[in-house]
Every structure is written in C-alpha cells, then in structure tokens.
Amino acid sequence: MTTNSAAVAGPSETGEYTHRQVVTILSGLMLGMFLAALDQTIVSTSIRTIADDLQGLSVQAWVTTAYLITATITTPIYGKLGDIYGRKKLFLFAISLFVVGSVMCAFADSMYQLAAFRAIQGLGAGGLFTLVLATIGDIVSPRERAKYTGYFMAMFGTSSVLGPLIGGFFAGQDTLLGISGWRWVFLVNVPLGALAIAVVVRTLHLHKTDRPETIRIDWWGAAALFVGLVPLLTVAEQGREWGWTSLESLTAYVVGTLGLVAFVLIEKAMGEAALIPVAIFRIRAAAVTIAASVLVGVAMFGGIMLLPLYMQIAKGATPTEAGILMLPMVLGMMISSIGSGKFIAKTGLVRPFPVVGSTLIVAGLFLLSLTSADTAQVWVSLSMFVFGIGLGSCLQPLLLTIQSAVPPSQIGMATSSATFFRQIGGTLGVAIFLSVLFGGLGGNISTAIQADAQTEAWQEVVSDPSIDPKSIDGQVIAALRGDIDPDSGILAQVQDDSSIIEQMNPVLAHPFKVGFAESMHPVFLLAGGVGILAFLVLLLMPAVELRATSAQAAVRASTGQDE
Image (cartoon, rainbow, N blue to C red):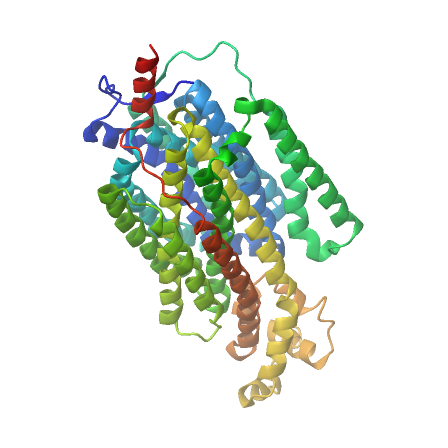
C-alpha cells in the first residue's frame, strides 16, 4: 500500500512538512470543511421555519435522516478510494456534488422532496470531513496534530456564530430577490462552494505514488450496507405511525437485518479490499474506539438536534437567537478541544480524555433533562456548556487513537471508519429521538393544558367573549371544551407547524411550550443513558502510543527499509 502527500511545496526527503507548509495546506482543507459545518448550523437554525413553511414539522426527521444516511454510507467509500486514488480529486468532486445538492434543496416544494435533495447533498458531505481528516493524518503526526486543533476549533466556532446569524437572517425574510427567504439557506452554498474549489485547487497539491495494477473496490459491500441501513433507519422514523409490530415495521426489520448480515459476509470475503476490513476489529484500541464512536454519536446528535427546537419552541427564540443561545455548548467544545490538544501534544497521553468527556456528556444531558419551559436561561446555558466540554474531550482523542492504532497506509480507512460509525450512531439517534419526542407530544400538551386550565389567568382568557371562535385562541379554547377532536384540531396542527404557538395568547401558548419541553425530557435521559454505555466501553480502552511521525513519513521509511 502507498499513501498520498499534500503540499504547495513538497515535503522534505523524510516526508515531513514544515509548519508553514501545513498551515498553507490547512487553508484549503478548512474551507471545504467550513462549507459543510456552516451548512449544518444554518439548516439546524432554520429547520423549524422551513418545516413550518412546507407544513411538515413532524416529519422533519426525514430531512435530517436522509442527509445523514447518504453522508454515512459514502464516508467509508470516500476513505477507501482516497487511500487508493488520492484525495484531491475526490475532495473537489465531493464539494461539487454538495453544491449541486444545495441548489436542488433550494427549490424543494415539500418536506419529502427536500429530504430527497438533502440525500443528494449528503452524498457530497460524506467526503468533506473524512477526506480532510485523512489528509491531515497523511501530513502531520498524531502528537503534532493536536497543536493544530485551535485552527479547526476556530473554524467550527466561526461557523457556529455565522451559521445562526445567516440562517436566522434568511429564515426571517419572506422573500429575497423574489425567492423565499429560507431557500437562500441552501443557495448561499453556491458562492461558498465556488470559493472552496478555487482555494483547494490552488493550495492542495496532491500527488500519489504507484498503486497496484489490480484494485478491488467493494461496491457489493456498499450496496449491502445501503440495503441494511435504509430500512432500519426508516422504521426508526416511521415506527410510531406504522406501529412497531406492524407488517411494514417487521418487513423493515427483516430486510435491514439481511442487508447487514450480507454486508458482514461480504467484508470478510473482500479481506483488505473491504470498505471496513474485519481485521480492524481485532485491534483492541480500534474496536473500542469504533464502539465508543457509535454511542457518542447517538448522544451527541441527540443533544445537538433537540437544543435548537427547545430554544425556538419552549423559549420562543427566533432562529438567530436560538443559534446564539447555543454558543455556550460551542465554547465548551472549543475550550476542551484546545486544552486537550495542547496536553496531548506535550505528553502523548490520550486515554483519559474520552473517559472524562463521556462522563461530562452524561452530566450535561442529565442537567438538560431537568429543564422546563420556565427554566432560567442561565441554567440551560450552564448545562449546554458542560455538554460541550464533554463532546470536545471525546471527538479528537478518539480520532487520534484509531489513526495511531492502524498501519499508516490505512489511515484513510481508519478515519472514515471512525467517522462512519459515529454518523451511524447519530443517524439512529436523530430518528429514534424525534420519534420519542413527537410520540409523547400530544399527550404532554393535553396534560399541560389541563394543569393551566385551573389557573385564574387561564380562566380569564377562556371566558373572554371577544375571542373569535375561528381564531387560533378560539380553537384552543374549543379543544379544551371538547368541541374539537384533539387528533385533528389545534393539538395536531402544532406538530406540523409550531409557529402557531407564537400566534397564541401567551397564557394559552404556555402549556404548548410546556408540552414540548416535557416531551424532550425522556429524550435527554435516553441520550444520557447511551452516554453511560459509552463511558463503560471507554474503560476498556488500552493505552495507545501516538506516532511521532506523519503517516506519509512512516510509509516512506518503511518503503526505504524494504528496499
């Protein structure tokens, strides 16, 4: 096996790069990663407005899950092809496909159509993160790589600040240049993508050494993985409507299981050519990292997905305000990532960080489970800060561990495997958690209405003769009196269009906000339970010595010895 190198001016004879060369390379890589990171923050901030406009808040999981499915499935494919053919062309292809998908999303007319176009966008997104991380592994040693954490945290911090502002601005516009405001959430990726392509072409000069004449690509494995994941993720989203033991659900279970079994058998048959070679699981550090990545992904995406909804629905924040209110979590991630990076670079010790980080993730999620619609924002921010510190302590150390545990020539496969399994966890987490959230929403709103109905303020509002029976407030009052079927009236409508809550009298809106907040409690607790499992798995992590040389330098040295 051989590897890729990247530099504006080539590396030294040993294969190592100077600090200046690394920074120059990072400028191109980070811009491509910034494109995907910014898109995630913009869309997560604007999704409520988009779902309300397209009349589909309760099916928003399709939009998120479709993107995650395709991004997840293509991640190991990009990693494997990058090891074989080089990373630059694949990176440029991924950016271009991401931009094409963005344009298609901008002109979606329904939530299901948007989900289909987000799936196309995800096909490109699958390569943006994994190819960047693999290229960095090629040119910088694991210990030295920790020094550059600040650059990436600054990039993520910038996207976290700009994303809510940009997303909130577009979501708040009825029209802009004759196009609905929220559609610019996706169109903004076009100029950013063009800039990313230009910078990557200029700064990222990839060259590859000779490859074996016979190359096997594991397309059958990719197809089996698709057959296995799609039905299982679909039933996770639709199970509450179909019924978990319905014919549709049972069919999805069977097809998904058969697909995953076929995938495992194919991977064994493909050997080293497999998308995810079975041999990687014989390396204890890699196996523990992969298992922990799945669990951390579930907890991470569960928390990150719910928090913007909580801010906008339970707290009444605008999309822009919701994004800004998420900054304590981002700050926690930056502090712990940079701090752990400096410590790892100095000492080479990596094992303690994910163990402590998983503990803090559990603590943060438990604190979030105690919040309600009336909880002071300072306590919510503190909970998010703790959650963010935990995430920042887990993500980079886990990646450094698996990249050091495998041979240098397989760093692309290892990087994509860790990213793949974390995204698997995140995809399952989003689908399951949203199903749990909306599954209990109607009952929690009804309970909250009954509780508030006993208050003097409520009685004063519902007895007001000036309220139009056809207005939103009038429908709420009619639902309370039993004049409207709760399964088809206002209680059902808010699950598809939460903006209705902001149109209500504040007294009548309060139990709806309480109902949403109460529905989030079991989700945060469930995510925290998964975090506990991650902690237990991470206790099995062996000590791993981080390499002091880059993957490229290690391969060159090995080749020189062989010769």
